[in-house]
Every structure is written in C-alpha cells, then in structure tokens.
Picture: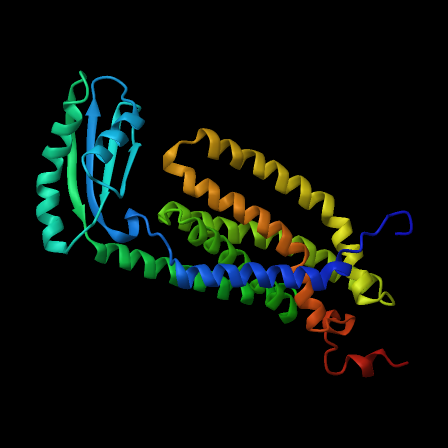
Length: 314
C-alpha cells in the first residue's frame, strides 16, 4: 500500500458538493423555466412512410417540408437508405389532427414528388394521439422509479444500507443532470433518450458498485485507517479502471454521435452526458454520502449470532 501514490479525492469533497449543487439547481431551474422539449413519441402526431426509387437526400426532404410551413417534424431512414419515415408533431385538437393525418400523406407525397425525379411510393401513414404519448411518459417515469427502488434493495442486501443511499443518490444525481441538459439545450426527449437514461443508470451503478466493493473490502482490511483516507485509497485503486472504461465507452458514443445519423443523435447525446456525469458521481457523490452518513467498520462487520460468543469461550 505504501508504494501506491494515494490521490486525495476527498480533499475536494466540499467543492464537489458545491459543484453538484450548482448543476442540480441549473437543471431544476431549467425544468421550471423551459420544461422538457418532448419528441413525437410523447406528443403524438402524423407518421408517413415512403419509399424512393433511388436514394434520397434527407436534408432536401427536410428543407421541402420546412418550406411548406411545417415546424416540428422528423425525417429519417427506417429500413433501407431508400425508405424514409416522416413524423409531424400534433399541432391542434385530436379530432383536427386526425383529419389532418388523413390528408397529410397525399399532400406530403405530392410535395416531395414535385421536388425530385425519383418515383415515390407511399408505404403507410397514420395518426398517433397524444394520449399514447402521455401513457408512455407515465410508464417510463414509473419504470425508472421502480428501477431505483430495486437497486436500493439490492445494494442494501449486497453491501449495507448506507451504500444503497449513496448509490441511489448518485443515480438520481446523474438522471436529473442529464435531463437538465436536455431541458437547457431544448433537445427533443423521445423514447430513445428514455432508453439511454436507463442505460446511464446501469452504467453508473456498475461504476459505483466497483468503488463500493473496494471501500467495503478496505474497511475490513485497514481497520485503523481514517475513513477519509480509506476512501481515498479505495478510489485510487479503482481509478485507472474507471478512466479506461469511461474513455473507451466515450469513443464509441462519439462515433455514434458523429456517424449514427439523426435517428440516434439524442440517444448518443444522453449517453455521452450520462457517462461523463456518472463517472464523476461514482467518485464523489456516492463516497460523499458515505462520509456524511458516518460509515464505520462496525457497519460492515458481519453480525454476531446469538450464542456464538459463549461457544467461543474456553
């Protein structure tokens, strides 16, 4: 242990608490002022699928639809490079939008056909009501809440209750700040972003468990070491693993962001933000909570069963 240079991570614990507090305040303030910019998965709208006889330019399609007066829409490939899915956000009452959906397909196809020499075939069209979006939003929020509760129970059983509080605090911290980034930048929040948030929870949890496992092991081995120094030792021992894992993950996510196309851009952004903030929280937030709750070696010692002490006497 003496050969290893221990990094004083916990020397910055007060600064990290202030930093996390500022990020959380900015995120919550953005929720209040800006709200979330919900994507079509949650707001509802018209969906049109068409097939071109030759590969189309998606940017030209977006420009054509924008010139026609539509503002909130998505254009993406969905099966092959020749197949295009167009989704236009709900703008009025449900009844009005159903009438609009019945007419939108022909109108959009006629518009696109007038801008290209390729043949366009309509594969399907329909209307997705906002009620479906509300159900998805409620189910997604409920799913995330259930996930956090189950994680808290699991870590309480595997480690100790104080570790579960630290882990859940770190996960809630990551989710709120990632959502706050989307709110602040007004990036569309859709089902792919919700899936990314669940992935962020899993990634951050894995990082936190690795650090927590080392802290628990060192509390049992280094019983005379001060808790702050012991946590510094534990984080230092796992730090290289944390950095390597985060950097390799970020390389893949940057490739997805740059080359993955419009369809998964929100997904990749959410994961990039989540991995960065999750790496930070596994080092500072979870460990800070353990210190605030005064974790000691007695918390981690296995309970003595009744009668064991008497049996151990000569």
